Each structure stands twice: as structure tokens, then as C-alpha cells.
Image (tube, helix red, strand yellow):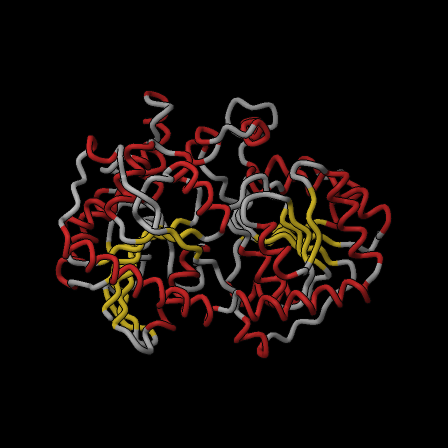
Length: 438
């Protein structure tokens, strides 16, 4: 099978500066390359050649405008059209898309695996009409963005995969009449490389891993932190991840959740705005606790896994989270987790038994859960071991790659069946009655 992965235009796929979706593409494509012809199309980092090969995967890197250019354009656009974000327009990042379409025509893949961006699917369908398109959603855009635009993207695809049951269910609720099948295709954990991790677990070390961005709820964790230190003066909190607040048009402008809307205080004009979210977080830390909290910035995937293995627990206090990749990364190392009942995270915790769930934006509940884990190391180690076993069974990259292979075959079968009947029509007026769910 000949497969082409189309990354998001802003994603970094190559180590060490990978995004979470970039990690997924990198880990899965390398495993699929053992028995298929795999190509990854992504943006070109500075200093990298235009094309090369890694573990049997062809990497095609596109030279395009810096992501900050489109970010600036998005901010200007949202002032004029606040209800229609620029990133949801078909011409968004057109320099990347146009090059990707040319690559796809030349490659003529049997399957195109498109990361997010449903509104690119119709253009890909026109470029490679015989290819099966798998639209892989790592966020809630199908439930949030313009219904007609999203319907055209779904109709142009042969299968829609969501990173969690949460993503799939919210999309199905909105597009229950579509004939395009849905499936869950999760993120993975590096269980195959844990033997190389030599970290020593530190007592009362609490870890957060992720973008330092308002929707990740790090401010809730810092509000809970004085209670933790009061009970455990030796406790230390490491905040691992880049200072990269999600743009307002990707978060607040899309949400109807009052608590997510309340995060506007961390953006320009808001009461908690201090120039950046990280600056606002640092200002929240009482001086007497400053020595107990550290911000490490972005680190390579292997280093993050080492930090997970050395922690007493990992906390993900997000207010918005489609999957919760840091949970499976920590659980893979035997580290228990505390997470909010948001998005796909309850699915992970309930499936693995590897931690505790609390309500979002509740510092008291969060500190109580952290203290429960820290108070009984022996029991917590048992929770971590149980979680590690279940993560190895459910979320290993090998299993995720196997699921991906099966979904590619299913999408290809669907494409062949559709082609045998008729070619789809992507005009807006024809997408309001989309048939039945398969």
C-alpha cells in the first residue's frame, strides 16, 4: 500500500522539536514503512534538506511562510470576521497546501492520511481522485467550525478518525446523517523504549507536561500548589513544555464552555494578562514557594519520558483536551496521573486504572487528589504499575500503527466501493442530506 501523510502546516514532525501530532506522524509512519510505501509531507525546518529518508519513510519537506506570518494574519482577520476564523478558510496556509497537492499528484498514493484540516479534504480529493482519504482529527473542529464546510470535508473523506471517543461522539452528534464511517485512532506511548530510561523516581516530584497555554489549566495547578507544599514541604513541581499560548481564535472564539470563555482574562485586555501566559503564571507563585516550581521549556521526547519516569505523579489540569497524550506517556513509565474530567482524558484513566479524575477548574479537588497520591507511595506505585500494563496493551505505538493500517485498508475499500457507484459531488447545496452512518 502506498500511503502519504499530510501534516498540519505548522507541525514539526522531526525530533527534537516535535509537536504532539508530529510525534504521532513520526512514530506511526516509521512502523508502517516495514510493509508499505510511506511518505510524510511536512513543513521544512531551517537547515533541513527538502527530502530524505528515515527508517524507510520518505520525508518531503516544504518551504513555506513561517507559521508566525499566518498567526499574525489570523489575528488581523479575527478583528474583522470574529465568527469565521482564518484557519477555517480553504485558502489558509495556501502556500503549504498548494505544494502538498503537487507532491500528492506526483506520488499518486493509494491512501492520503490528513492530519486535521477537514476543509483541505475536497482539494485533496480533486488532486488525487482515486486515493482513499483518512481525515484524522486531533481536536474538536468538526463540532465547532462552520457546519457546511465541515460537512464537505467529511464527504470528501473515506473515513474520519478521532483521537478519542470524545472527538468521534461530538462529531457524530453533529453529522449523524453522513455515510462516511468514523473510528477511534488514539495517540500512543513509547513502551518499546522504556528499557533505555534510567531515571530514578524522586519523592514528591509532581510533573506537568504540555504547552504552557491557558486551556491546559496550569493556573489551576498553581492555585492548588500551596496546599500541596504545606503538607509536603519537600514537594517540587516541574512544568515541562514550550511557552506557547493557543491563539484566541483557536480556543475562546470556538468555545461555548463558560469556563473556557473565562480564559480570556489571560489574553490582551484581560484582567490576568501579563504579556504572556507564562508571565501570568510566574506572578501567581508566592515568593516563599518560588523555589518549589520550575519551568523547563520545551524538551526532546526522550527527555520528557525520562522526566515522567522520575516523577511521583503527573498532573493534567486541562479545561480543554481532546486526548491527553501526557497521561499515556506518564503511565507507560509506571507514573500515576491526576487529570480533569475533560475530553478524552476520562477514557484513558478509566481504561487503565492508572490515576484519579477531578472536575476541571477546581484547585481544592486538584490538591486533594495530588495529596492522596503523595500520601501513600506504596499504593500509588501499584496504581502506576497497573496503568503501565494497560497502556502497553492499549496504547503502544505498535498497536496504534496496527489500528492505522487496518483503517487505511478500510478507507481504501470504501473508496473503491464509492468509485464503483459514482463520484461524489462536493458542492455546498448537495451536502445537507448526507445519507446514513456506516
